[in-house]
Length: 330
Image 1 (tube, rainbow, N blue to C red):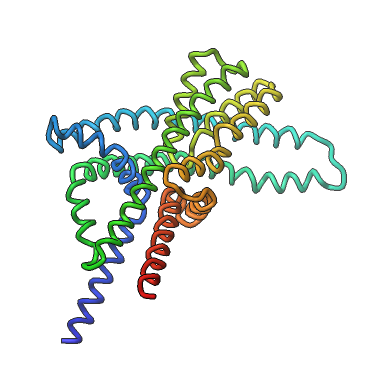
Image 2 (cartoon, rainbow, N blue to C red):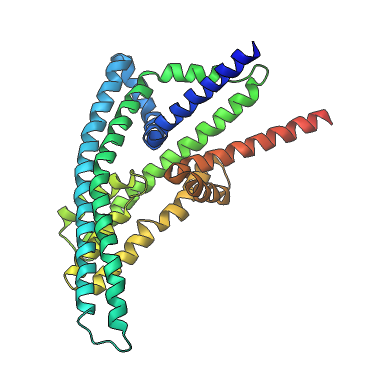
């Protein structure tokens, strides 16, 4: 009997390991699909009252597919231009520096350095090209999981409640409520801040005379859309504008839009204004939110920007519950 239990235990561990290896590359897509489904759940619930749950999820997924298509095309084009411009500028600098007459054998040192640097830059550009299919596969999984989370939202809620151990319903409900409040605060802060980023980027493009107002408005809209994509955020828009101005020889305005964008659009507001908004909404300490965002991002990547503050809020709830129990016992 014991031998059979050991065998089945080993089989179960192998299955779990293979399942983890299968799902691990797609964890980010699944995680953000769950977060977005949670964000639009109130809309889904209202729409489900008029049409059934599957049709509501299908409508919302179709809208998301359209939005994803627009973002994907713009993202590929913008990043392509950034990569190509960066590569061309580096190669132009290399060619120019090799024409200089440098003392003490510095010319030979530069040639050796560039002979190693050029293949690395080429490899970087190739990696970008090959990453596009992976991104598209992640997008397919993201959309499929978004639909699945919406359709099965009620069942997921029941299963989560069923996992709470008997006799600890009060603590379980308190932890779920804390997680819910923190997640709602993160979503609202994300939405409000991203809209503000779009407005500021529009004003920046127009105010610095980079484009006319309609094009500046488009830049603001793209900033809002890209700000919902973890890792890219709004900095990609002002960076593209700065590179464009540099290629035009307008160094002053390139530096100005870079300072303006980094200070008011991204990344500085993400670590100053966003923690304050989340702390105010969730009634948390600002330092706790900031530590949660930075530490979470460090530990879990971009997912940690959401996981970190929620985990620290749950730790705070557990400590308060432990103090309450100790006070009752004494």
